[in-house]
Image (cartoon, rainbow, N blue to C red; front, side):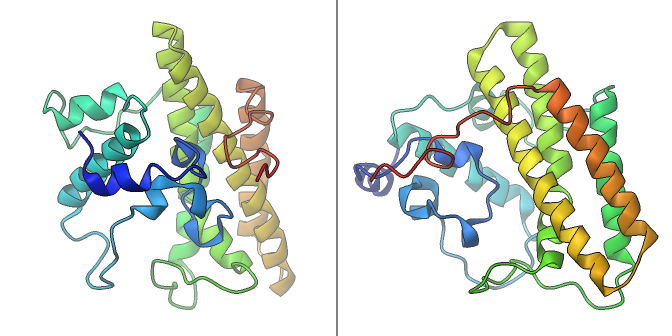
Length: 240
């Protein structure tokens, strides 16, 4: 049962149930935060310590939080989430490699991007990235998505496998929405890298852009419905 804080906020008629399942989690620049229960109920940030400190406990709190969001909106929490919270699966579930060329493409881009960031001549900006009145800088866009693209690609493949195995419509939707978020991250990253080349030619940037082109093409081929998928509250025309 969700607590009263979630239940109270969930009565807002402007909320879009489950909108947080299809976003890229860059809340600073999201136009739909006023329609998102997860954003309205997000834990207050204390601004202290590293994001990696006590990571396991934070993951557990996040899962409880996501479960409460689903319940408050009358949605069924994902089965995997319930299994983790019930102790039926290990919290530290290992990363399971998928023998899939698309997954390897996503991973290779993440490796190229991480190597580029590791060789940066200036210190990387602290996290979370600041909110800028006119939007993020190209470098911030590249930094924000450099791992998320591979993560969302992996999730799209994993959910597609589950859908093929079980016939689950929810898994099929999760595969397409994950692929769409990956594609949007690819589009924005490619544009950001193109702008970054204006500071001077860098063959590493050219390599990353070529990798993004391949990855985009293969995701669109594997998930032909992803681009056209309408994420509730994010891709729909403003109805209010």
